[in-house]
Length: 224
Image 1 (cartoon, one colour):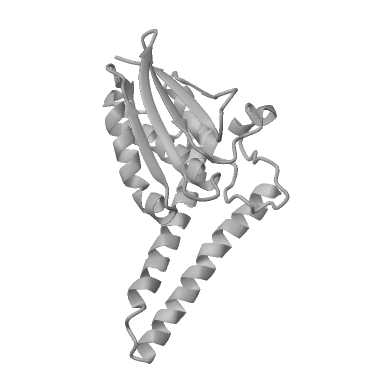
Image 2 (cartoon, helix red, strand yellow):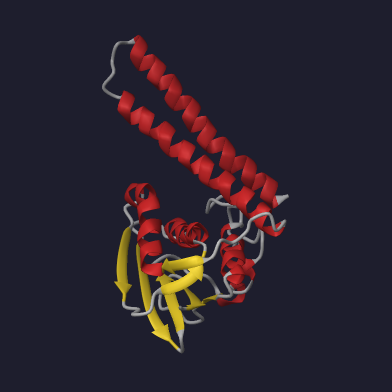
């Protein structure tokens, strides 16, 4: 029930914004005042992208659970994957005044995996970090090597996740309880999707048990 309520809210809001922006464009054209048309056009494009991302997440997780998505494994440079994810998320990063800090120190960064799915993992973690930070998110992504593994950590300066929810956050539909169900946007599918992809790559993902501030996700894969 919560999922349906959230989905209805998440789809209705951008659709309403798109409709309003389109009406304002029509009004500006009617008044022969075209100065604000680029502004309203960007609203339409931004809200359309949000809808696409939400729909893709639902469809991708559903396909994964039905084993309809085959993981195409190739040699992947994970540093390149991180840069691609940042590029894909650039619009949201700029729109939310977020900052990405990189410390890519792994000397062995190649893994056997599906580049597109792994890019999706990092994109979703960045998206989560932005959503769970009140403003001006600082997102730090680090890589290192330990015991023949590639370690990726992604930290933010947001509200953090109480320790009692550290295991449950990877469950489908779970959302951290808040006073307002729509305080943080989302369906509770992002981390479930991430864990599914990481598991399919024989990797592990966990939350840092003692983050100083915000949340820190740690992923590790065998490198090749």
